[in-house]
Amino acid sequence: MAGLSALVAVILYLEAVRLSRSRGHWPWYRSVLWTVGVAACLAGVVGPLAERGHTSFPAHMVSHLVMGMLGPVALVLSAPITLALRTLDVVWARRLVKVLASAPLGFVAHPVTAATLSLSGLWILYSTSLFSATHENVAVHAAVHVHILVSAYLFTAAIIGVDPNRHRLNVGYRAVVLVLFMAGHRILAKRIFAHPPVGVPVDEAQQGAMVMYYGGDILDVIVIVILCYQWHSGRPARLLSPTRLTRG
Image (cartoon, rainbow, N blue to C red; front, top):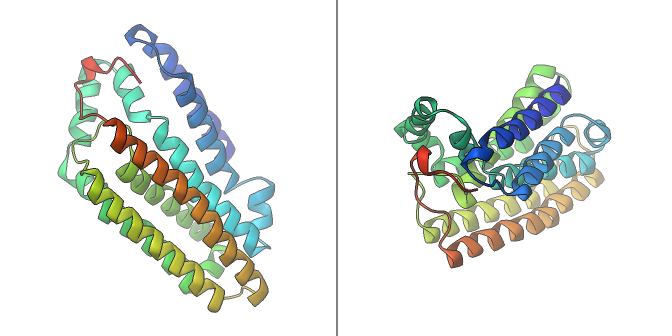
């Protein structure tokens, strides 16, 4: 099911690119980023890495970084909302803009809210019996993965999003939230090192914690570089009318 959903997501994106050609060129690298992002998210739930993650905590943590950090970064940079606005007719595009500008979405997509949803979810997962429950209940396993992916996407979009966003805050505010989020992520890794999750052997917990700590640092640096580039270049721009979205 996950594999089919991933295939459909890639096909829909590429078809949207084809349909939007009349509105101008769409950068090829955004299509590559979307494909990489979908593949990274898929790797966290099916395939060798995901299977290994059921029996190895370090492998689980690698899949967490791939699906919960690398995947969302690639998906956000592929600008799916911008592509949708280019592809949809004016009526549907205006409806989408209305949803994007709504107060509820603005609250959920706020950097602080998104960071809280993402980080608190990880703390609950690794500090309670929830982690062991994911191996015993398929529904819990699926729900946890959905939460990790959605909250990570919202947080990444709030910090380095390139899609139109009327709620986007200034770069200084986003930088502060990012630094605090990184600190919370590192503290969680240290806690896992000292206090393994329920059912995880001490040696595996320590290896997994180091993967989370140092691997998270690598991906955090990527996000910082992107944020600094956006700050230096003055991007992303303010929300545009759907009829003016002719460039990626």
